[in-house]
Structures are given as C-alpha cells and as structure tokens.
Amino acid sequence: MATEVLWYLIPREGHYPWEPEGRRPVDLGYLQHLAATVERLGYTGALLATDQYDVWTLGSALAAATGPGFQPLLAVHPGLVSPTLLAKMALSFEHLHGPGRLRFNVVNGSTQQLREYGLHVEHDDRYRLSAEYWNLVKRLTSGEVFDHEGEFYQLKNAGASLRDLPPLREGHIPLWFGGSSPAGIEVAAEHVDVYLTWGEPPHLLKEKLERVRERAAAHGRTLRLGLRLHLIVRDTEEQAWAAADRLLDVTSEATYARRLGGRAEEDGVGWQRQFRQHGGRVPARARELEEHPNLWPGMSLFRPGPGTAVVGSTEQVVERLREFQELGVDTFILSGNPLLEEAYRVAETVLPGLHP
Image (cartoon, rainbow, N blue to C red; front, side):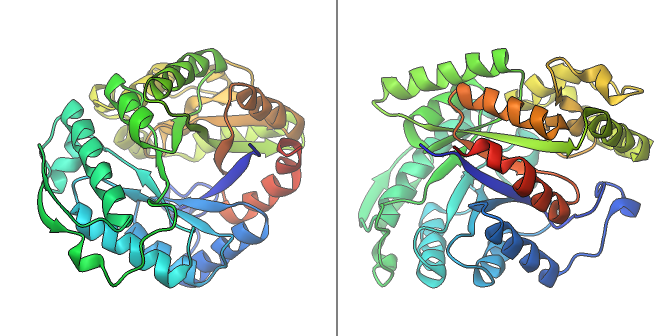
C-alpha cells in the first residue's frame, strides 16, 4: 500500500504556540487557508486537535472550504455522545460534504479527563465501552434498525430515525485509534482500521507493532499502521538541533510545571511509555534526550500529550521515516511549527523521499 501522509491542524498556531508570545492571530479564514494549503500540497487530510475548538464545528467549516482531497480526522470519545446521535452526525457530514471524507480518531481519554464530562469509567472499562460503542455505530451507519441490550447501552428501535439519510457505502466511517495497553491493543485488533502510535525508538516500536499484528490476526483481520510525529527539519543537522534548543529556551517554567506536574501518575500507557524517555527532566540542551539517532521525545515537555520529534537534515529525517516504513508503517500524521510554513517545507523536502 502506498504511504499516506496527513498534516496536523490546531487553532493555536505559531513558532511556539504553547506560549502567548509564540502565537500568531488565528481566525476561521486562517484555518480554512491552512486546510486548503494542506490539500493543495498533497497531504490527504489533517488530524484536528481537540485543544481548543469542538472538532465537529471546525471539521465542518474546513470541509466546506476544501475539496474531496481534504479528509478531516475527527476525535471521538466513546460514551460522550450516544452511538445513535454519532451515527446521525456522521451520515449528515458525509451527505453534506461528500462521501469518503470523514474519518474518526478514537480517543479513549484518561479517567481524570472523562470525569470532567461526567463519564466515570476506569481504564479497562473504557475499552469495553469502546468496543460496544463502535459495534453499534457501525451497524447504525450501515442502515440497520435493531434493538440492543448490552453492558453499557440499551437501545430500542435504533436506527429508525436515520432512515432519511443514505447509509454509508463502505458501512462505517474508518476508525483510527492509538492505545498501548493490552486492553487498548485488543480493541484495536478487533475494531479499528488504522492503528496509530506515537514515535518511539524502532526497537520499542517494532515490539508493539508485532503485538498489534498478532492480535489482529487472531481476529482474522489486518490493520494499517500509522505514526504521529513532529518534524524539525532543516538544511543541516546542526540547524535542526539549534531549532530544538530554541524551543527549550523560549518555554516558560510555568509551562513546564503545568505540562509535567503529576503527569507520571496518569493511567494512559502511551503517555507512560513516552514519559520514561525523558522522565520529566528538562535538559539544558535538546540533544541530551536523543536515545536513537534524530529522535527527540522533548516535544511532550511543553505540548499536550506524548510527542516525539524527528530532528535533523532532510536526508536524516527521510532516513528515519523510511526506517519506520520498514517496520510496516504506511501512514504518517506529521506536524511542524508554524503549521503553515512547515507544511510547505515538509511537502517540498521530505514527502518526495517517502513516495516511490
């Protein structure tokens, strides 16, 4: 399968947008321009961040301003919206914006995060809920009308209210999902289409991807494999690491404290794996955290969630991405700051090296 590359899109834009002085003004026109640029440069869509705006509102606004080549990947937390309502939202989106554009990024969240929304389920319970939820959504978007009695949902005549919307030709919206715990991998193996993971040294990633493949095969399935990475690519290696150093230098102590305070105790296995790569330590120079050539886990010191960057010259960055391709990765979700300028840089320098 040909390599697919998406970009990342977040309303907080700039050279270091986690700090007020590192941001630039962003409005709907700017975001629509960014989405149109992403489409024009050959990316197949964008992962929309949940940081600030509701992704459905943003995704609809961007889809209306772009063509069929821009496919938004929208986050969905199973359990926060009823499966019947989500199916209606998905069918409406596809009917209004064109078939085959919408994709779901399944986010199971953390126990603490979901309690803010009134959902009180522990770690493994979240994955059982997710499995039941997506089974229901798939049936609903394929046009079924049915009753259901399950552990988390009891539905009566589900799907009857959706009859005026055409069912999806493929039966369901493609599911993209990242989960590193045994429960998360099991849900991925049985239900999702693209398994996503954060960047890690290849020997660690190889081990995890092999487990995912084994569990998918046990369910008679194969999955596409995707990788979420930040890129700091420059003409030379020295320039790239200097850019990473600058990110450390311009980040405030308050931001470090906010991002790292108490995070070691979070129950997300993906975050725990990432945290172990830097241990919450802010280095004097970025390269002190380089455990594998050009891989830098330092992005998660100041941005939400785990975050690995590939830092280096164009040739080095392409070499690292090809190394991941050799492990079976066929999908990349990439980013760089600022998003607009770096979308051009990556498209012009890195992408040609990924496509045969």
